[in-house]
Image (cartoon, rainbow, N blue to C red; front, top):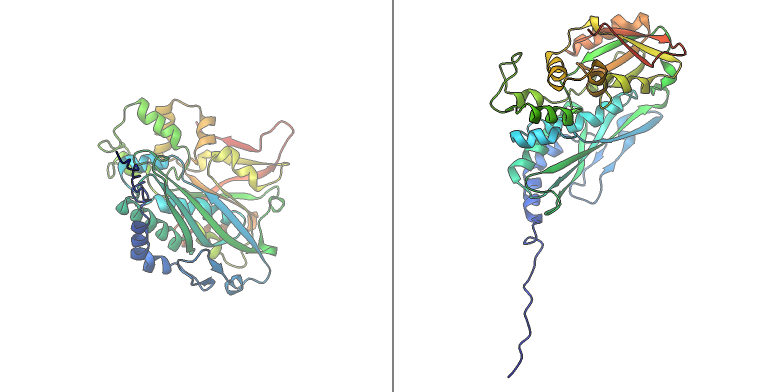
Length: 357
């Protein structure tokens, strides 16, 4: 009897869960919107292996390049549960570009990385469109990205995001800790709620209290359900630096992210100084008081985890404080004098928070 060889089934990349053609279609559909973010420094080679940037076109005399990378943490889990991806890309851009502002620079180029288990066209388009909106708000060109379909690695409908920003600042304009001095006033700029940090704690308390984020509302905000309130996008503060009057000198900027008001400020000044922050200067967003109550945490933990209503701190000489406040008012940012810099005594902390009870 003649033996027949076993035939091996053809196994394609698409049958393995990766559909390259689908993303090519998505990219083609969004090409016009992506190109709308380009500035004069971008050499148009859309779809090539890398982005080409002509920094001379940005108009700097002696530039230093600034680079940042970040994600949006487990805020993604809430977005997935709510199936609401309209703002998560703005968060991604904001977390990167706001860090560039903290050095006194401006963001110019942005790249994204989206990793999914299965490519869902509507979902990915929504994410990329919100990244484009973030780039437009921050005056940043979306010059590249990567969407990776990874079946078996990201289970069910889980996915992850990462962002990368490149900016620049004139060498003599960069903000360094040595510029902040004793007696400087500290201006707070309001946040848009929680921004993109502390969501693991929030998700934990939501599960603990069996809160329905879709069908329940906060008693202090009846316009939106809980998910919509928690998914408000991070403010992008580019105009703070971009439109700053030339005669306004800033000494430092702190972007309040992970580590909250305890860990972030001290990255902007030297160890011999202490920030005295006075909570009686503003009314805390009731959202943070709700978190404190539901999570049953101490004030210190609240301040170390969340921005508590402050997205940025700006350090400025006393004589320039009113000028800065007027500048921020013209940008429609709510801002106020929240504290001052003092010489730190031996046993004092780098951040002292007063009048929070």
